[in-house]
Image 1 (spheres, rainbow, N blue to C red):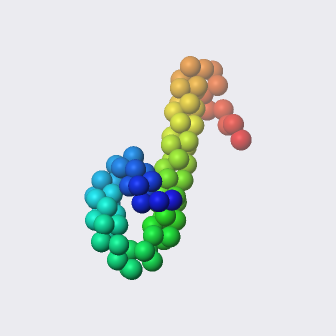
Image 2 (spheres, one colour):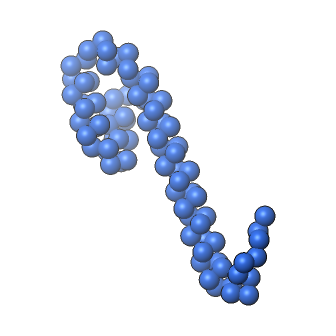
Length: 80
């Protein structure tokens, strides 16, 4: 993942302060930043994955809430 992709992903996650920091660090091109890039990429991928899981879990919970409200006779039924 290149720097522009990291910045774009951070902004899409509404992590604007981190995106600005990455921009500044990339402009300086310090050796410390270059060493941190793989770690930052891994952490960013993990954050995206975590948010995807939370989104899916939220969608499932919303579905079950709507389903049980539409079918009151099944309310309290175990689905496992």
